[in-house]
Amino acid sequence: RATLINGVTLVDHLWFCHFIVANDMAIAARETLPPHHPLRRISAMFTWGTPQVNEAAVHQLAGARALLHRMTPFEDFGAVSKAAVASILPIWTYCDAFINQTTYDGLPKLLRESPFYVDGRDFYNVLSGFIDEFFDAFEMEWCTADGHVRDEHVVAFLDAYPKAVNGPDGRQVNLMELWLGIVGESMTSKWQKYRCDGLRKGMKVLYFIVTGLHRHMGHVA
Image 1 (tube, rainbow, N blue to C red):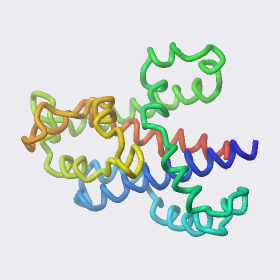
Image 2: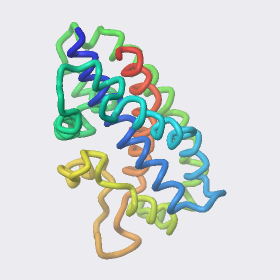
Image 3: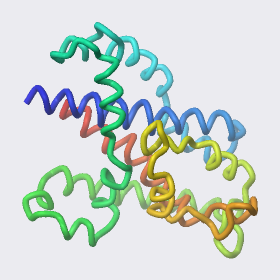
């Protein structure tokens, strides 16, 4: 039990949710989007307090001789942290069963009926509807008639969002982009780099990770 809690706390909760997904989203939004841009304003709702919380977590949880180090039997916590980062799974392994009916149907019956998936899918569906309503309000501004992202600030956000969402070494980046459906017809043309349907899905996934998924991980550990 203690091993499971340490693993969930360090790998899934602290590194994946806090230090990678939420932190990277907060940085990219603040560095690339003007203060009144709709994408920055909605991202702020989902990343509010992230810099302060993560700064505190670095000192209170992730550092040498901090709480997590004292909860584990390892002497070199730096090596433990490196191993934790290397063990982070690709983003779709956390989220696909909430989004993809085929993936969900392929799970064992016991898992499908567990609160994690039953409640998680209910929450994702509500969040999905909220994002759809928001996205529909700005789709004409952000997207071309053929479904590509044309808003220069949104393009800059997508360029800047660190590929570390699959781990700080950026592994499996192309697979993530293909899973989201965000890759456009041309990565050389500024206005054909990203697809709007992929952006819509990406918003749902990232916001789900920092809300429902994070809440679950926080209660487990």
